[in-house]
Image 1 (cartoon, rainbow, N blue to C red):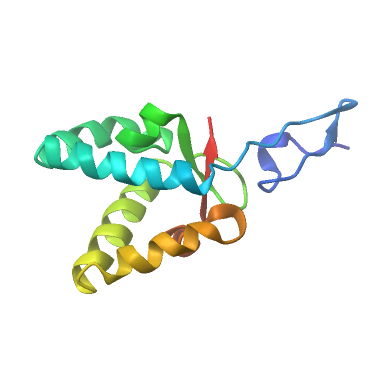
Image 2 (image 1 turned 120 degrees about the vertical axis):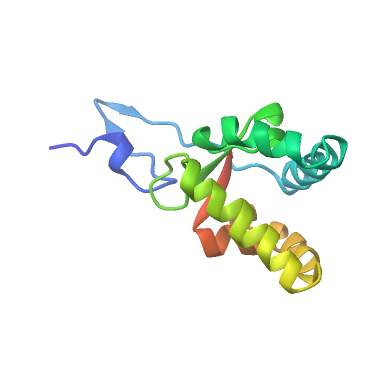
Length: 135
């Protein structure tokens, strides 16, 4: 009896029907930093409102506007399934924005250094239990 591939934890490459299922590649630290800077640039250029409207269309696919342009997807750290709108809103608004406001942007600096750890997971990725993978 085989388990459906969508029910397996992230990173597993089981044998299903005599073939190995590919696992998505993690985004490199450089790619993560580029996406963060691009999101910041898009936010400033659109005065925040344009970025937020655009984000409402990209969040259901587990992406921010910059991640959509760069081909990155935010996925669950256990199942590998892309985040939906609610989890993306929690990750982007509650974690990133709220923690930056509360800590007076110290969170952003600390968070940035976490991208160089295992699986390139930032602090907000660890809290939200997410990974960022190539589409």
